[in-house]
Length: 285
Ligand code: ZN
Image 1 (cartoon, rainbow, N blue to C red):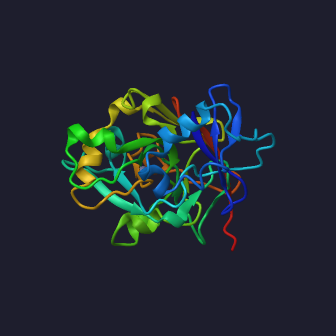
Image 2 (image 1 turned 90 degrees about the vertical axis):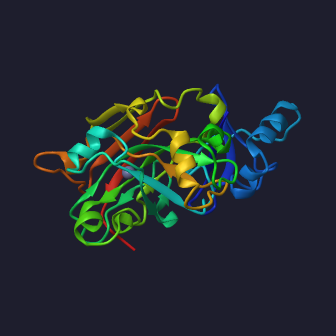
């Protein structure tokens, strides 16, 4: 069972996608997949409710749009340079401790929505990433207990404006937070359904050409290390997102570098976490 949110932007309703591919509207049972839902052991309770057989779950026949499968996470914490070959292509050393940065939650968009280039952007870039969704409040969590705090996983394209990120001084957040820069989805896969998140292929194609192709076994810092580490610096709330970093093959690392243009199409995927696809469009208000 995977969690989806469907409907127009800002009006999404919660649903599930079953093993068969059938999608059910579960909005009669749960308000939304938000902090309260995850904090209340929502995934487990939802499964039990669905198993009762008399649950009122209309089938979603015409799915007009998928949204991000988590409603309003309080934060998106991203990990930089967490694949050795990506650190190399970025011209930076593999870090001794995780490099962290924030991405504004207003950047969140649906997995098949358009990605909009910011005004005057010349260096917008792609980054396929495994993102972790927190299920239980995490503060000073030990590594060996960290996975208990994970609700599940979701595919993320950590779109990045390299000029804003690296040439405009200060923190990376400027290049990571533009509207539509965080396509998340198609769905949240509960932790139990991904027994080993550290052996998943991940890839990204630009206009049909493979740009990134790697495996999460190459992560420098793994998921329990990241959850534990981040929880030393801030409290992670249920529903919060940790994006674990991108592998080799971003536009910045090419010779010459290659950046997104209007009309480009990005397709990306991770084993077990599905695929997403975004068209690149010009800025508009
Ligand atoms: Zn990233």
